[in-house]
Image (cartoon, rainbow, N blue to C red; front, side, top):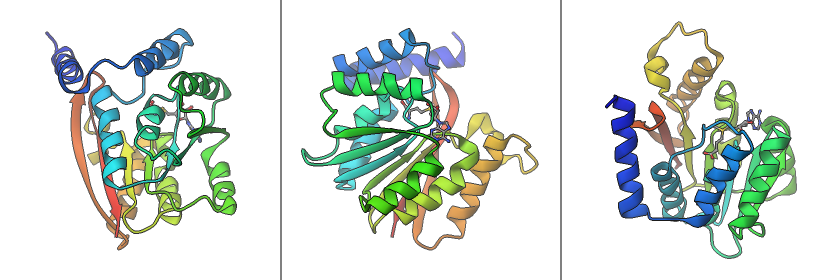
Length: 222
Ligand SMILES: C[S@@+](CC[C@H](N)C(=O)[O-])C[C@H]1O[C@@H](n2cnc3c(N)ncnc32)[C@H](O)[C@@H]1O
């Protein structure tokens, strides 16, 4: 058994024992695969963690940057109260179309809205609409823009807003100061921003799982 297989089996064990079967989420994964979407969404244990964090933060509204097929969107939207709202941003029209179907199948169309376009164009529109503040923000799109997304998350937040940023370890590449990959450079810029931002209290946690060695950053607006 490879490490990846062992980590995957442990994820499966947690999913079977404490998360349980979920028809809408399983259908979403099947629809993503059938539509040829890349398998780069969060795992079930991580999705459940997003759900729990949004609940713990008492979020009424949530913002997600990077929808893919809406798997994490479903987890987050389910954490919101009946009149709560999730806005999820996706640059790719085909991904957004699959996400809308998955969200509808999960009976969450009233609560979760998928907006198509580069997130850095959608975010100023969201600010202008006065929907903010969001109580929970999940950043999971093009990692090269992570510092920009974090600045926007702060701008659209309130004290107590929880912010989660996925894929911040990248097989350990994050510690390479001279990395040339735009993704690693973007994640490092985001950590520099967190380090100098007095409004954020943050940590980062490494994870292993079916998708290898990675991790997430978690911050709260103080
Ligand atoms: C890692 S996937 C999101 C996975 C999803 N959060 C989940 O866990 O199910 C990243 C998504 O971000 C989208 N994306 C990439 N660049 C973007 C941008 N500039 N604005 C909005 N979305 C973007 C990609 O098309 C892709 O669907």
